[in-house]
Image (cartoon, chains in turn orange, brown):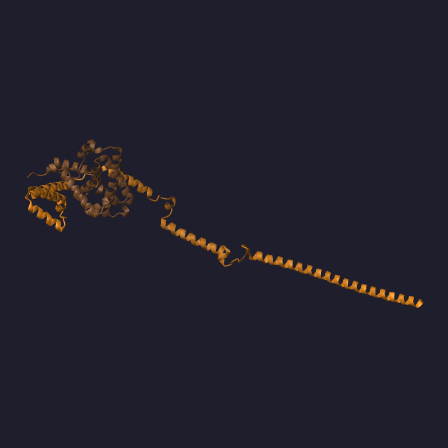
Length: 210
Length: 169
């Protein structure tokens, strides 16, 4: 009976010890709070032990809370601020020589005006912007201007007239040959006819004489 | 340089230095880390509101301190065991000199320094510096439930280390 009591007491002490911090922080859940109360009520010895542990825990807690921070040597912040200040000044944009001539907004307006003037100049000077759009014809991936095309037409017309001329010459020669051939044919026909007539006349003469 | 940045540096430098010194138990290294963190803060401060500036600073400070602690572990250079830094720490000026340095308080700070992460950070941030749970979750990158559970464990470990101070009946 005594041994059982001791074993129960030991288990209870371990359980209380395990849950003491949660109990001090008031973080025990409902069933555990009831068990803690029941355990402490059932054992005056455990209740006394719990009171002593609670006192120690509170002392630790209070002393830790009252322990002040160490003071950081002032050199740390001094060096950090100095180095950061150097970095910051490097990161800032440097003063340019032209900024002394005019303030930044004036440079902006001047830049805008220069852009407008340049665009207007391009519009009037460059023909494609002024409405005189040059036409291009692309043939086999090659661009030809109107002038080039006109020149090509002129050359083509010259070539065609030459071809016409040559064609006429050829036609004339052909007709001449044709006429000559027919003439020869007539001469031939005339000769062959004259020869047969002569043959017939000679034959007749021969027959008459004989 | 912005006035806001300067104000935030002046306002938070003690807190950062204190946190770093307690994590590293080495004021010299803490000083270097705080300086680096504040220079990083210059690059980010424009995008951070005043409310999130301190949790951000503490988080970056903690990560930098953890890097130093990892390096120490690799090099087997346990500065805490040397004791020299403890003397230096004891002489460091505090933001409030009124509090008496009792024997219990000295042992308490030593006990905090012996805690492992994240328990040490939790005790410093919650018990010493009084940050709310939400900020602590941000600084330690932990969920709320884990923060509370770890904090209970950290307090229990502290109580165990300081059990000789348990009041007698």
